[in-house]
Length: 99
Image (cartoon, rainbow, N blue to C red; front, side, top):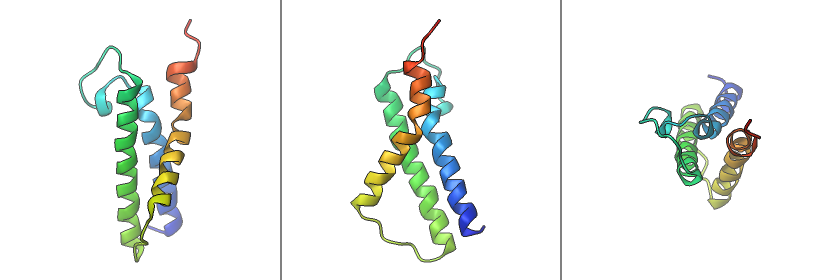
């Protein structure tokens, strides 16, 4: 896999996983169906999906060559990116007008 394809794969995975908690009523998209879930459950899922994206990114980076050491700044930016990518799902779930 080329480095550019790896980058696009991680970005696509991040966009899908960031919105998944807001488009599904199931826990982690495969668990038991709940009638309503609170925002805290959705944010917990988002943080776990952020860890999955980080793991896939680190794995692809390791396959492509030497892994760079990441500081706290990298993870702070990653959380901000995941929150930004989750915004469409949040709007769809909580802010759209229900008829």
